[in-house]
Image 1 (tube, rainbow, N blue to C red):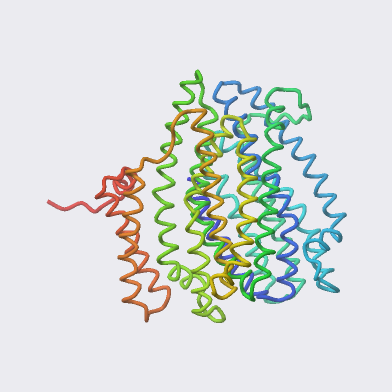
Image 2 (image 1 turned 90 degrees about the vertical axis):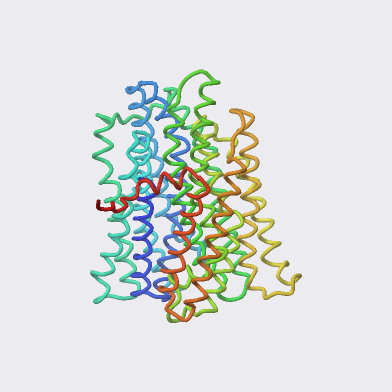
Length: 514
């Protein structure tokens, strides 16, 4: 359900981007909107889903698991009140201090472009605040195992922006149209929050608004909130550093990195985030003695790791072997040439290095959150960020020259370095968790079978790619990726992989007539 909801919202997000590009292209208005959106989006990322999932869900779900419904209700109401108050203050400060923020985020903007960016930020900020409250709804819904609604709600946000562009795009252009899109974002934020709120209120039975922080549940949420908040802030800064490093590379590096990021974050969201989001409330509500709790966590973690690996291993191999097919099908047209496709493929292939580590690491971090330990993932997250920045600089700036290759391939060095840092974080998380609950991980035999199946299937897909290389990119993608998927499921089923056989058993195969 989580993966389906994320997929729906990602598809609408892609449509939103294409509609936006159709009307605003790479104009000054488009620059102003994208720069403006980064500022309130920073607030959403700091206070939003990731932070609340790590701090609020473990406490709330555990209270539900212990049948302490009244305490759970008070905790939810107090967290909502504190979140509303703090977000409102930050939104107000953001609106008042917008000119100073523009000087930091977009110092090169001047004149009308700068003035338009300021107006857009002030429009977008309240919407970002509402999206933070929407993340609170997600926390309540996930704790009650209501996953689908919380992850499909962003579809309404995307639709509101799309409809605002379609409604005013023919009669308006430039900065004015960008403002309409910004107002569409605000309306979409309200819709995303509003569609979840009635279900949340029904689950809570009543919402008790209070700023009282004396209950054990609220104190635990606040205590857990701080380390995750710091960690999210550091990650945001790290992403900004990646963009800064890419800006020192030849023209096209920043754009190519952004195009590749849309692709390589998809399996992380679909499989890493979905499994982690589904397992977090279940792990958090587990009860019993320490040995019994450890056994439950090991069992759920083992199942989640297998699920993630089954889907992410073929994703990584596809990026490595068939990344040009994927990129060409989505982007190659007009100004986006074959050369740009190969460039993005190189960056995408670099992301394959750490794709599995990034997704498995999310589940390990969620297990720590279920144990109400937010400081351990923070420490290891800081190590990963530090390595990403250091290795990113080395791989992106000096390394291409030392290897005698074009400097623009430093963009691929950024994704490779992030992957290596991801493996270090994963190893640290796994070792620390093994000390607490016992041995965890994916069996070596399963790992070998998954990678072997993915490589064999990729070779089959590559043969189809070569045979159809003269055809339209979409046709090549349809048949080569189709062959890849069919071959992967067939090989893993033949290898006896449980996840493959379980999925194939759900397919409504036509029955033979007798």
